[in-house]
Length: 355
Ligand code: NAD
Image (cartoon, rainbow, N blue to C red; front, side):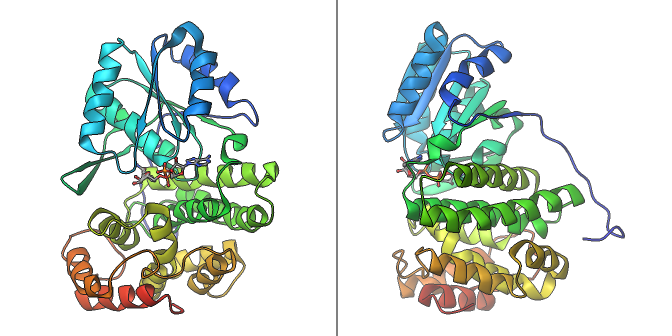
């Protein structure tokens, strides 16, 4: 964007504390800061050890532990979590884990208005957004509500060390996608562009370091810093074709979340390329390249991430139907979204050929 364009920027309340090696010890302080004394801790089965440590650190302020978070927040899981919060008389929720755990915490906040504290263990960025998601009868609905935006976020790079390299890379690219789409969103602004550029730079610098040494705590910290910036971009802007495509591929065809973002991003960027000169200038600077979509495709391939939708389980026969579904929805995108255009994009992504 230029300063001939108008923009609106709305800051979102929320506190971020970055505590390398000390998320567990820092969480009770965040509860106290918010005046909360009966917290329900939610997590998925894999994050239970850390969540239990958080629950222990909360001591008498922990009202219970609910370790039932699953991908895409099925509505019946949300119902059970709300019941659990009500049964223990919770006055707040702490979500420990990836986007799925934070999503379950948000589902409780949406229904009950209880304040949420997030302790993320991936780079999904959900902790920085007022976006919730719920899945019912195989259809995922999403929406925005300030109630679900975590009041406090505790970032600790040590919680992400256990992320295997493939998930590190795909989760990192999921974060990058938020920054890329924010650069050409209808509600972008100079501050968002600044965060997006720095988020892309920091994440693409951290990921090769982490692929080489997943225990590199400094690089883990850099990736989490990037996830914070990219998540903030998602929280403040309206997403376009890339996110809609990933949403459809995940919701209707069951493709895995972060992996789908990773495969689709270079193609969505190439599709929008002719209409987004300003965003491309920023991305060229952040990535140190003339061709951002090719650079992203090359980076993910080099780091061993999946490159094609076929690898993720999309059938060739589903491409045409998915294209019609995505082209048929009204949403803001810099280049008109046609069924033919999306079909060509999806065909290339299905094969994994150079964008
Ligand atoms: P996830 O939370 O489902 O985690 C993926 C897998 O990694 C799970 O098996 C989990 O147990 C495991 N895991 C998590 N942290 C780990 C760690 N530190 N070490 C080892 N394993 C770990 O995946 P995600 O990509 O973080 O989140 C995806 C979900 O979040 C999707 O449902 C997506 O729609 C949602 N999301 C929402 C927003 C938003 O703003 N609302 C933003 C991004 C993603």
